[in-house]
Image (cartoon, rainbow, N blue to C red; front, side, top):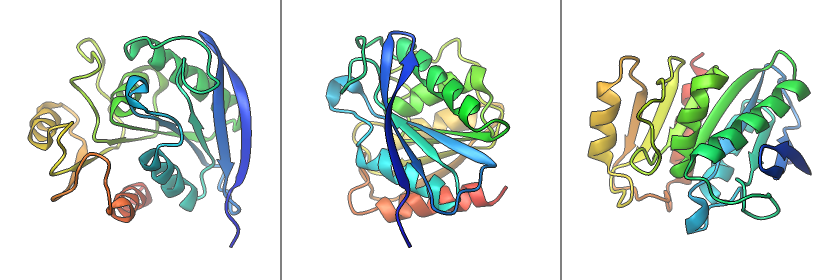
Length: 210
């Protein structure tokens, strides 16, 4: 079985062009496409982050083409860091491109760490069919006035995460009106070292339920 077809391109974003990577699985199911947001730009986060890669692979395993992209100011993307606010706008621009490219396809929106919080913000106005947030850094990005998602939503969290506190994530998710499904992997740190297959399996299992 061959890997996905890889396409590197530059998309139009609100602060200039955005570097993007589209991967189309060999057995594509055009019913959905995925957009995945990467970790904090100021701490080495890029579209090549291994957790972001694994989330994309999970979506592709289910037939969905995916878009990974660099936020403004990272790699070949133009602009400068904008506290999660501008990055939300970047995400919405990428989603807009995906909707033009695959008309009628459902959006599967995802993000890791800082990108997880950005995905939550972007979900408020993009109405994804599914949302997957991996260790979302809810204390790093202002979600105060953000309408919380009402779609099926998965949070995957490492139980031993030293950057995003698992207990805090559990309390926060339980406080939401539309409670996400929370999967905690015991003993797992922020970057899911040695547990990327378990992360992928949790995502595939969640999406496959619908």
